[in-house]
Length: 132
Image (cartoon, rainbow, N blue to C red; front, side, top):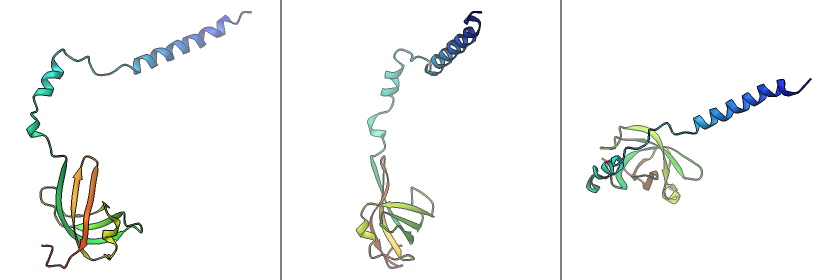
């Protein structure tokens, strides 16, 4: 008896696998239409681009702070033009700025929003009348 009859299914399986791999590695996007990419690039003038950083003044109540001081959880008031009032965590740019602040203190900080993330800067305690 020859080993050929048992080798044929193995070869068929290998060829089927190669065919599936080559089909799945092809791009699902159709090829670009000549001139289409250039048209898309010129439709958005540079003046309408978003600024690289946006700054918002935030007020709220400190609800927790990590032992390292690198993150705080704040029950913040509405941030006009950015988000509704809610309780959420924020990364802190300068851990020393939160050193003298206690849980349940009213705080104020500048929220810097950029493509690299959202970070609380200049965190400081405030009196209740100062932050409104």
